Length: 160
Length: 435
Image (spheres, each protein chain N blue to C red):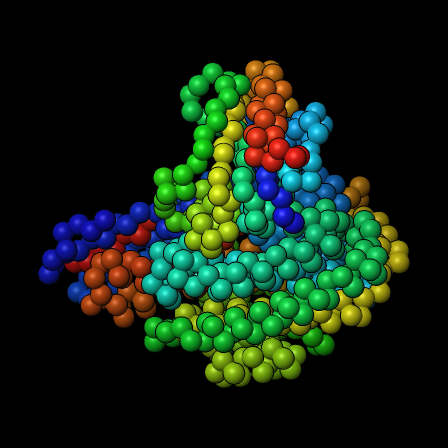
């Protein structure tokens, strides 16, 4: 598939607030018109993380939505344009099961398959225990985060 | 990190071992040029799956145990199904067996491609990890990812999704894929088969340390085909046992340093499962294409050099792609998709060949179909003592190496066996003390 903008919600909906990225991706699809130049999807624990390499093929902009744990107030949204050279190093595959987002992005750059820009939208989580359902503050941030994603899509792919 | 390297005492403590699944460490003691102690300290938290299964329904075992591992969930599902069906006296149809085998081929393809390309090849090529390998040899990593994608596709088509498939049940499947969906796998599998042959050529060109292990090989055997989803258990020492008998022969013991049990045959002999063992037991029944690939790679007779396991694994990739294609071309949907299974009080054992080696399950059911006891013997627990033996040889052979090089060689030796500590604990700081 080829889209100029690829939006990916990361996380597990069975780990409470870790699922907020998936919830935002769903909200973008439900609340905003998405044209052919944009593609919105989720990568959950039942999907191979290296799928991102294929999803990003030919994309100008990748927007990744994920839960964060920085110590900020739950529901706080941050937006960061990622510089792959500044990503944490370490072994690209320290776990056979958990090839992380940073490792996949580094791999994409090594293979010259990375999007030109990668923007991370992070939503601060509070509860990452087993189970379904977001905490209230995190749930309330979904609308604003999905608006931010839609705005990024509009600006990167005006025809969308 | 290296401390105090000198004539009389050396100690090496690198950081956590990467490119294996789970948490553990390795400690090696050397005195007067001889290895006096090797210990794999597995501190992955115990996961209590066997206790968790007690009181659960017989038909929950495949899905519960699949969650032990995201790389080999099919192995857990099919070993659980085999054991429960054995307890209930059920034999599934040949069509169901073929579809299970196709699903298993998908798992072998994705797991072996992952291990060869993203975890293990870097060791042979002097790269820090797969990212550096991708920078140096992008076509190789593209080939590996393409193979992995094909394995995932087979699992999605047959099992419903690539990780933790949802279509497997005791007795068969919830739904048989239609003919068109299976037929669509043929072309990707043809390309994967060629990529697997190219993989054999690629890894055959690696340089291998000249070390051999005196292994007792244990693998499954089947009278008609290369075993994956069923068969008996055979050893290079003459054993030929049903899964239930094998369960009696394997004695596991707890040691303080490990949350994984150590398995010995008859409580005495440590042994090796996995690609080297499968090749030792089943080379003669490999289909022609895989046999030719093995021959072209110079694999003759027993392969006792653990570093050459990557070549055997590549040959198994050829086998899995070729076998999957054969199953696709002869596919007939099982109808009904599952056999009826009525639970009865009793005991059942099931063993299958996971990518890393034999995975044994046993269950004791009560008359209501509730699990009274469960036992799961994963490949890495069976291989632990053989891995320690490998390390002993590797260290003794490499005493002239620098601490850094020796540590790298030890980590490489562990990765030869593609260990999954999360499965077993139910790995790795390295500490080498030289005195």
